[in-house]
Image 1 (cartoon, chains in turn brown, blue):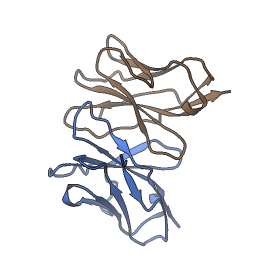
Image 2: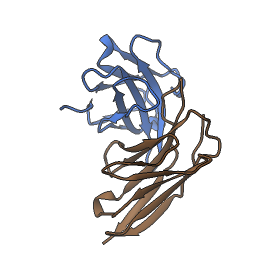
Image 3: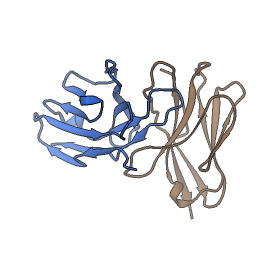
Image 4: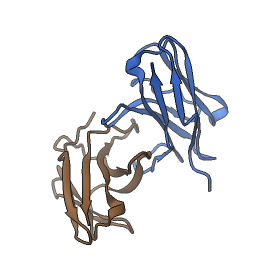
Length: 110
Length: 115
């Protein structure tokens, strides 16, 4: 199963942008990159996903390296409600189970 | 609309007893997944159902764990002869179908404590 590595924790000030990195050096050509986040005492929720091109939605942006071996989730203006554990997941054709790593715990400072 | 629901929300049991955890997926979702999350850890895949296909059981940690999905909808995860290391939050997710771009919608989980 393809693996991802993320920093254990990061801090950000409220209203500032946050860049959450993810390394996935063993990614294959058809693997999609998905990001989920888990707020305290809740199940994970979808944030964004992409294949090769950068992606934007109302929650965040996803920047994917040209060689696809890394990606960065960008929260443009962090709020206190964005404090959560963020997971970067590779989804492989034929097996759609998610392999979760330990994720990055984001702390947002008021 | 209604999301994924799970019951019970909390379960306390004694070591050696059997437990059943229930998941109601979003209506019309053909794929259903079970994960567990031990305290302070990431999620661990357990089992995956897609339509009428044979489930992917590759994540079940032992033969004490089993799951079924009746009528392509509700799923039950059963743990027999529970052990203390089974204590965790058990999360269910569903998606419209299986695919590289499908979104999994997670339920709130069942918190299991084995004494």
